[in-house]
Length: 371
Image (cartoon, rainbow, N blue to C red; front, top):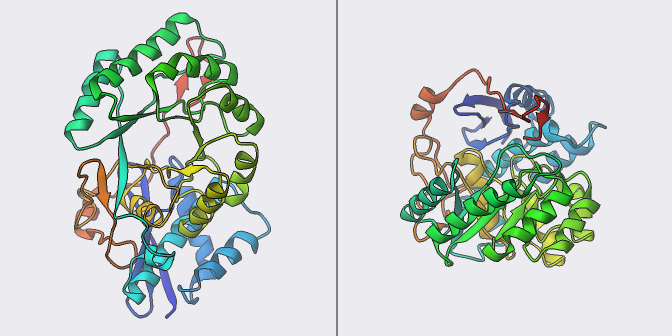
């Protein structure tokens, strides 16, 4: 079996799908994407195709090493995201060829179902409460929210009170049996993050995600030591090397590698093993499409220290059989490969030119705020 072609699709609202064709008719799907840079990543996939075409798709680890290490420049969002989507597709092909789900090739399932969480938000405390109740009605038992927009280096008590009011309204509406993740989105400086975490501790968040930007691991470790709320990070880190210092300095209790950014299925499974040795959990980042979610579910299924799975699309209108949430969980996929069948007829109506602009935040004085 040989790789014949690599076909990419720009898919609304902001995704990039990859279909890898083989010369014997088997195909594999992946989701290589950097949000807002889909055309750039598609070009990178095509350039990696110069090496891949004619190769055996089942030599997944070998091709990963060749593409990551063999070109001198390594790492970064574009190169590793292109590689991640390719790697997902190669696992999909290999699983289909063997007639087993990918998680069976990674040691087998350690759970029967995967807990997932929904996103909620709003412009007021009342809106947070309403969105929380709506998520519960849809069957979720865990939610995540970013309770603010642009944040200055230092904010006053009115800002802190507004944030606490929103989360408190969500907690009251959801009850103590629902887990609430808080995403600071790297918008907050360490000192302000410590102040917010202290104010939010009585509401028992499941975690605080990216309390500050991840480039300075010492700063994040300082935040982690200042609060009883577990710290989560990882969506902007790439490969096992990007997560090493976070674990060594105990800067986070929960890692959030993105399977479409961090290196793909096997790389994230290895990151999870590193986390397990440091008594940390993983909660893969996935504000992406259903192919990325399918890849996440394969890793979640076979990972002992898995916590909860992010999702924004269960596959309605993209997959022939979308995933279904029941009592806060999705069943572990049992089909071969990624366990999904893309609805290409429906997909045809969702294609676009790939030009999606990441929203930008601005401070009141007109300066740029961290997104």
